Length: 277
Image 1 (cartoon, one colour):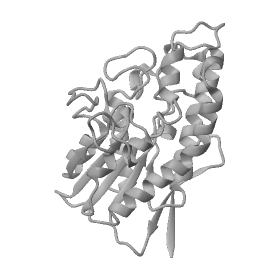
Image 2 (tube, rainbow, N blue to C red; image 1 turned 90 degrees about the vertical axis):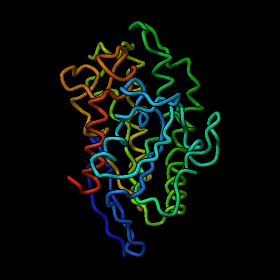
Image 3 (cartoon, rainbow, N blue to C red; image 1 turned 45 degrees about the vertical axis):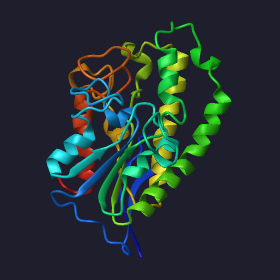
Image 4 (spheres, rainbow, N blue to C red; image 1 turned 90 degrees about the horizontal axis):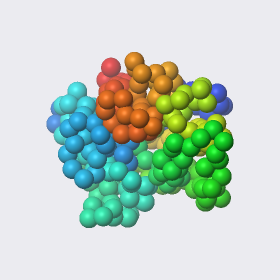
């Protein structure tokens, strides 16, 4: 028998983010000292957020470090700038082994933020930054390749989640979504420094990334910490409560990536998904 717990609804869509738990395999207890592995790309690593720990852009104040400190867990953080789902599953990234190698049978918690690089979300945003209102930068991207990657992403995320569960059957897995870079009024946000057409395309691509996360978790033994939904009202033009930068860095982080405040809130959402707050 499977229990389904609805956590949140994807804004303006028919998708529902769910957390599914198998009653056949008891979850490992998240007691102090339990093993915690953080996987993912730059949105997990925290480039530009103090203090930086190495070449992968990892910060000792990214969301995984904050979760580990709050719950007293033993963290292994292998998140890295530029990582894709392949870099988690089976493809080394530079000198680094596939990230899943850090997961073992005694792992109690795994968090993961991945997928944006699979569909060229961040690189496309970087490429089109600074365009004028008359330019159509995204029209010059390989849109067919991006569309194919978007269509494949739910299955890739599902394969990744299944592989993590196979290596650590008792682990609690939390998929942490990308905070929303393009708010609902993105066309009016000058901090993005993108043309109206490029903003529209990239905002839709970000929503497709979110939908892939929801799809992948809806029928698996995993939780979702939905920073995309919760980040509305905390975008690049919300300077007082900014979770994510636009083209310019307000105080911490790098452009189009979470701020230190964003990582604090992502950590809070992970803890909420775990039921620890």
